[in-house]
Image 1 (tube, rainbow over the protein chains, first blue to last red):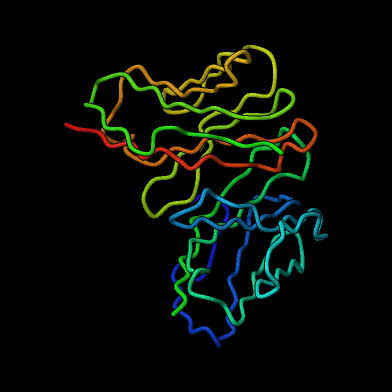
Image 2 (tube, rainbow over the protein chains, first blue to last red):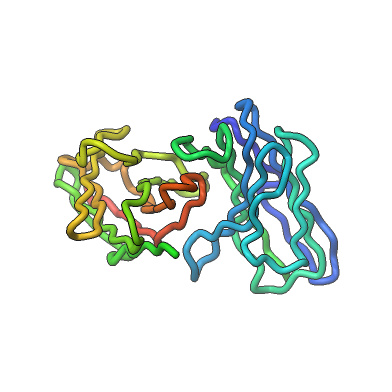
Length: 114
Length: 114
């Protein structure tokens, strides 16, 4: 148990579906992150939220839409995805967006787009 | 922009043998440096990090890493590997003015022979 919980752990969706990934952290942190881990590329930072404000969007396609309603919760809304979006999506959190803070990762949500 | 190279995609060592995993980075100044481990089906766990000071950093689970500025390297070592160390290991760097913006290497998968 890392203090960062992701649901669902596995998701299969069609290209026309709309689904969401959920992340909750129980660590009292103020910064949250979405990373994508696919088989053929290194871990990629997608989005950063600091005190509920998005501070980084790493050129992510608009079919991925993040939402951070409070410092403990982070969502990734998915719509009209492509098969190449199939990957492990990792949520993470840290005390805040400053240097020196350890980033804690969840166990990830495995997404398969069919 | 920073980048990270882990030259070895797979490494196999015998239990009890020593281990060294290589990591080279590219960055204009001294970055923040990290090693994470990912066991199958799990998220990433921080093993150790380097920000400044002593270039030999001790981490959890008996791991250590040495920062060598002249070689732009941050290699991970363990004197005696246990079967439970079998996992994927990721080196990461972050700019020293944005220590939460991690760039990951491609990972090294470690297998341990009995």
